[in-house]
Image (tube, rainbow, N blue to C red):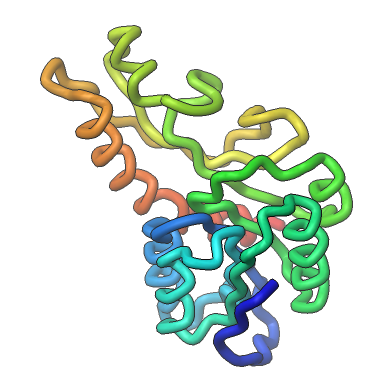
Length: 199
């Protein structure tokens, strides 16, 4: 762990959310904007990235949210240090938003609180990578995005929320990716709110 930005604050009576990212943080942005609303019962207290240079960290810092980036490529180092931070800040839920690593079963067990992830397909279809190309190749009529609970089995946890988009004959993996990403930005914040409200 080699970067610290932001400042500590107390969030009394609010559910505390941490977000893991790997890159530009477009879903992070939509989540931050959504929970800036007045009287929100949810507060993003921590953003962590396995990529020291992730652009999303700059946005978190601009938004005055405590954030950390890691230079180490060691999965063990990342997970152990992240667990310490999550515990230190009493995080109620962890959200993966463009986080491009698979968390170990040991991490999931030790954190012991809910972890949500967003996946660019209508699960249980197309777990893993290359979802858009696979949907087009199979001539599916619809694709979409899914928010689900993270379990030890890849992309197999309980589905929290889904929304679909129509696949046009003119679509290619890039154009479909853009359409699905817009859906992701719309439904992820709502899924977090609904999930935490019902905890």
